[in-house]
Image (tube, rainbow, N blue to C red; front, side, top):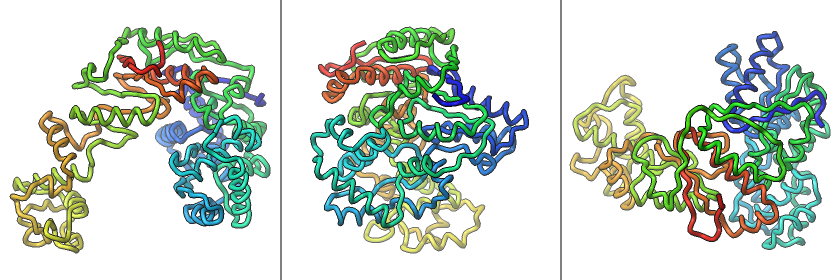
Length: 512
């Protein structure tokens, strides 16, 4: 139990974040000093939204709200740590030499980030560090974590050696990792006295993070713990949803969804009731009927209009989907990145405008010069030509003639625009097909691809859910059946209007 706390359950689309931000706004209107309000979240998204609302309505800046942070950032700030204290790429390389174990050396040192699990899934050393970190987040011995994780591709003796060498290195060099920020703050951190403390996305906290919450909460007059156990889909990071369910006896359930149509709500309730371990929650859908349709393939979807998100269980499935949609000449985004190289796209359009006699603003010309080839037979501009642009009028619109006469343009108008823009042969054909369909190749794609995990907290007008799973999922489902139910529940509840269920022909599939 967390002292002075109330537990707020926010089913999908019920306005949990809005409700929490409203509590912040009420406290500020009541005269509570901004530095006596804490807002903690699993990720930066909710915190950024709260900060933006406070900034716009109360003319506050982030510095005025010092306790709006992830728990990692809270620990980092509270310990007075600096970025130089964090494990950096060069540290991992030294550790690599000491252990004989390869590490990717790729880990963010931004304390505002949430969980850093997993690291690389391809580098063996990262797999050992990932297991060590998970044991620390779960607060269990590493060998217990090793045995329970069934990490048969890892060696227990090597695991112990990596663990020892890692700890020795950090101790010797005075370095911290993300888990250290939590562990050390629990030991020596001095929590501020707060009038209001909000813990958002609390269903995703690990046992170690809950210990930090319990360390902070006694210094707060009022604590709101918010989340949704039905959307607890991060067990693989060490999360124990029971700690959320048992955090407080004072319970409030938001009972009106402002997103979910009636048809989607009906299906999702059928799925969510399969979860064995949960808080029962009754909530109403919108008054919009919406649609739930079933398909055998994504090719049955009419995606020529509207905004779409297609979701799958794993990253591999998302990548396969992306390849298939590309072959069908659809423009898509994966993890927010367009299927069309944006630098190439802007270079292409800039070239065509110049070729057609239009004037182009200086900023666009500078981007063009930065991107195109500057040496060899195919050089578009002279080497060092970008420096010439510094003398141009910042307000100027430059034409082909201007660039040829004064600013180092070497190319001629008849040159192939796709070669100038540095599109590869495959990309060239793809972009040409998109343009024939009238697509704006510099726009944010209407069709997004995502895993359920990445889409959590998001929404779209039209959502498609692929019901395929994997042999590994099949094994996990036997041991942790609630995991799959929660994952598909999250995916299905993103739809604002229409939900499309794409059946899988594989034996590994989620049965509706």
